[in-house]
Image 1 (cartoon, rainbow, N blue to C red):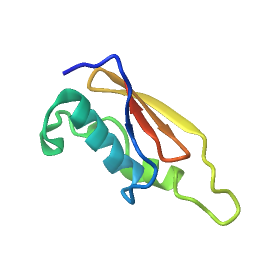
Image 2 (tube, rainbow, N blue to C red):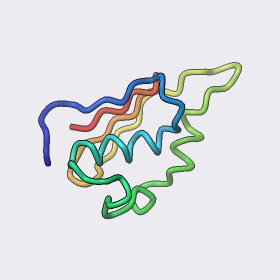
Image 3 (cartoon, rainbow, N blue to C red):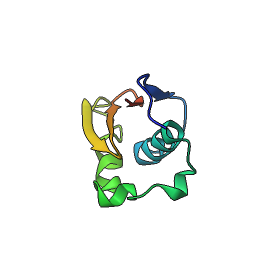
Image 4 (cartoon, rainbow, N blue to C red):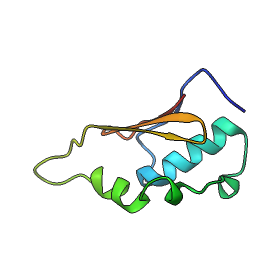
Length: 85
């Protein structure tokens, strides 16, 4: 299911950004997260994404990352928001 409206995951969730991406894309497509094909790790390194947005004592902000996944533009922001359009 494609949507023209962004699907966002709130920042309060304790999940790492990679898991929030999988959940948001699965929600946008109306499928179970385990059924995403290709899996996220075939598109980008989920551990690197999580490390990029891991807060540090001196620099809690890490900017924004955009990439294409399953026909969606995915935007991950330093505040923890994941948008899928």
